Image (cartoon, rainbow, N blue to C red; front, top):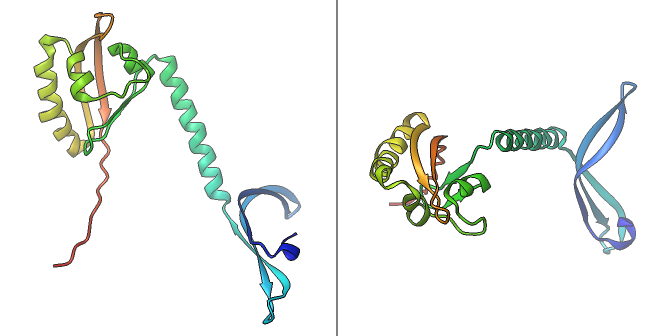
Length: 179
């Protein structure tokens, strides 16, 4: 096929079961087939490049299994999870967090429009101050924060006690510049 068409083809993460020392083993490869042409442009052969990506594929599989296990444990414990990008302010709430604040699943969530108004009035100033001035500053040093508060559902107005524990992960981007 490659010899007749002259078209380069690539395949990622292709499984290959190979007998090594009498034992059938599974490997994964990234293949690339490229035509080899003579000086007249006629195809005279095909180069095949193969890179062993077995460890990468197995690592991805282990990560996917671990993530699924964590999702199952979180769902079974009826815990909520959220992420907040400290640079953009963008928030990502899972279904349980949205349920706790009675926020529609399809709505984009924000700190100012959803989280703060969803706090019980008696807790709002303390929690906002704690989160803004203490928890995240402390988190910058050790990554952990822990705060307890009441939330009032946006639609049903039910009061719910929430303990928010988390870890802050920092990524630093350095932009080089020339003077």
